[in-house]
Structure formats: structure tokens, C-alpha cells
Length: 470
Image (cartoon, rainbow, N blue to C red; front, side, top):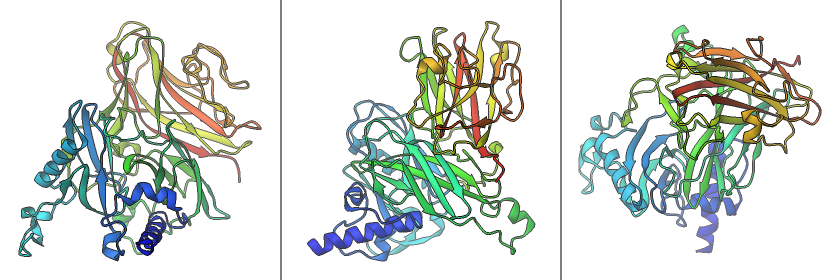
């Protein structure tokens, strides 16, 4: 038994290496969170079993929509079901299994395959269940733990909040990529994704990573849709708590442009886009509403072959910010972490005022940025403009403090996503390209809406580039 236990830990460490490349070997403690997602844990490992995993839920539901999605590409297939407050994990797992077996969201051509049934007879793939429910486990998926994760407005069932503020930096001399992120207040048992399998308390990781090579044998039309050929590489971090996995924080590093951007199309958790947190000041609880905006129909499942995500226009989801009271000011925020003091950074985003041109009362939708030290976290009062920003910030006090761009009464985007950046000064702009002062290695960015109750304003993308001359 002891030998098998150790063999299993060695295998899981190998899993971490396979997932993360040069991420390194995980220790036994962090493997404990993932071992229950691996078939026949404790038994001798085979290569086939190492590429299979389970999905787990725990406790009871709070009610909402629960999305299960694949993590193999930045435009994932998914399926969603409704949950109801008080439902057990076992009930929800059983319904998710039934939904997957009915529509086969992750295996769109299964009906063209010949697969052995329980009797060993070769039959059409759609005659054989894809997964089955066993208590609070959904069995069995291809891939390693973390290949399938949960999102949606359902925040119970033991699903931990996702990591936030994932940031990448790259050193071409050492060929190392550095990842920094923030964990929720309640710690994870373990962390997975691009970092392998690691202890749940870490918030940064460094690994060897060579820039993608441009392939000479690609045809012109293939080159136009090949992320690798365009120098794009996606990194993600996932939290694990008691065997239940969080949604992922994800960032795309552009090796050709030496920049990073949020270029994934993954469903949101609790109405908040990956990497970001909600914030509000004033008003009663629930008067700020954050939702996943969708271009086109938000279907129950999507099994189509996924298009390549190369530009913000390719993204299907965007952050929607609404309010139910004029007394609340709020929006979403994130940090860019692990930056270099003395370096200058440029930020781009895209804002959309949607239908606000029909609103006659005064309102404001703005984007802000401010550099500061690692130990600093901005308060909701600071982001609302009622308290000064950290010393040395551009426009350090008032509603325009740290402002990069703004829209408002008489100045809308007319329902389009409009680019704005720190490169050029705009109306009421307080911030241009940001040079980090000594002791500062973080830039916090945030969106803020204030005014009458609104049907929604939003943004869909952000990009950060170190423009310091190398």
C-alpha cells in the first residue's frame, strides 16, 4: 500500500510536469487536492489512466447557472445547466451527467464513432454514455485534472472563487516567463494550470519558456489563424479546494509584441470576467449588478469547432456593469503585478456605453489606472474618487483621479466598443503612459460607473505593454 501511495504521488508529480512543461515537481501536500480527481488513485499507474480525470462538486447549491467548460483552448466548448438553492452536489452532478450524455457538448462527432458498450459490443458512439455520475463525482473525462472546470452564476457547491489579476512578464535573455496573481482570502489547498500542481498559498511562479518558433511550412491562410505563429501563448492558473476546481485566471503573452492581453473567451464566474473583482461604494447591497454580456445567443451548450481568438473582436463575452440605485458607485478592478520600477507601461482597453445615449440624467463611465507598491490595495472609496489615491498618482484626488478615459452625458460610444489607451490624451484624461516610481511594481486599473440606474455599460478587453527601450 505504501509503495502504491508513493508511486501515485510520483505519477501526479509527473502530471504536473506534463501540464506545465518546466514548472517543476509538486509536493505531496498539494497533490492531495488533485488525487481524488484521478481514476483508481493509489493503484499502479498506467499511461492511459494518467490522461483521464474526474470532476467534483461538494455541499449544496445557491442557485444560478452552472457552466462546465473545457480548458484546452482559449475558445472553449461548454455546457450549462440551471441549479436551485439547496440542491445537493449529488443531484447537480446527476443532472449535469444527463445533460452531457444527451447533447455530447465536448464530443461533437461521437455519433460517427464505433465504441464498445458495457457488453463489449461495438456500437454507435451516441449509444454509449459519455460520463456517469457517482455520488458527487462526474466520471470520466479525458485529460488531466483541470482540463474541465466550472463557471457561471452558481457560487455554491464548494466551487472556490478563481484567482485574479494574473500577470505575465518575460525575460528573453533567460527565456523565463514569470506569472503573478492573487488568491482569494480563504486559501486554496492546491493550485494548478500552467504552473503544474503547486501548494495553494503561492502567488507567483517562474518557468522556462522559449518563444514560439514561426513555422515556414504554413500556408498564408493558415498563418493568418495560427496563434502560435503569431507569437501568442496562453497561461492560466486554477485553484483547488477539497477536490473542487475554480474557474481559471488566464492571460495571453505576445512574444512578438512583448505584451500581454486578456484574449480568452471563457464564461464568467458570478458575473465577473476572469482576473477581475467587483467593487462598490454607497448604496444598499445588491444595487451594483455585474453580469456576463454576450455577443449573440448564450446557448445551453456549444459544441462547434472553435474559431481562433486573435483580436478583441473575436471575443464573445464582455463585462456588463449595471446599477439599481443612483446612490451606488462601482465597477470592476484588477492589478497588473510583478512589474519593473523605472519601466514605462502603456495600457489599452475597449469601452462601450451600449444604450446610455438615451439617458438624459448626468452619468459617467470611466477607466482609471494608478501605480503603487506591492503592499497597497486600493479601497472602494479611492476608486470612487472620495479618498485620495496613493501619493504620487496622477490627479490623486477627486472623481477624475487616475482617469485614462471617460464617457458620459452627451459623450457615448453609440453602442460600439471603442479603443482607448494611455498613449494619447483625451477629454478629462489625467493619465498617460505610466512610468513606475521607485518602490512601485503594481498598476491597479478599474472601471467606474456613477449616475442613475442603468441598463449597462461595459468593456471587453485589456492589454498591457512594457514600452521601455530595451
